[in-house]
Image (tube, rainbow, N blue to C red; front, side, top):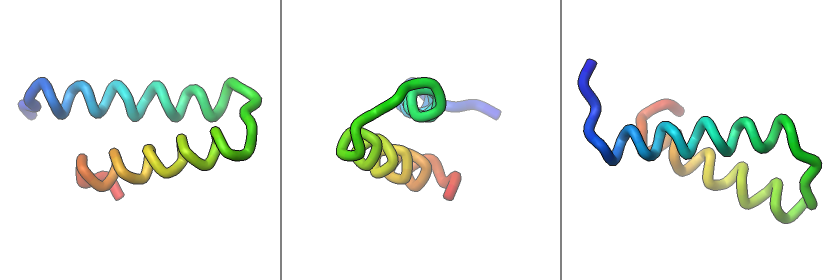
Length: 48
């Protein structure tokens, strides 16, 4: 499976955001923004 640089960047961002949700205690607004970005990335990468 080959992916381009943009897909790789999005995948790494997605992993980092998921990690952040698990490991950090976040304000509700921050958590909501991260969850929205995760949904966006998953949709762009056809993972939803």
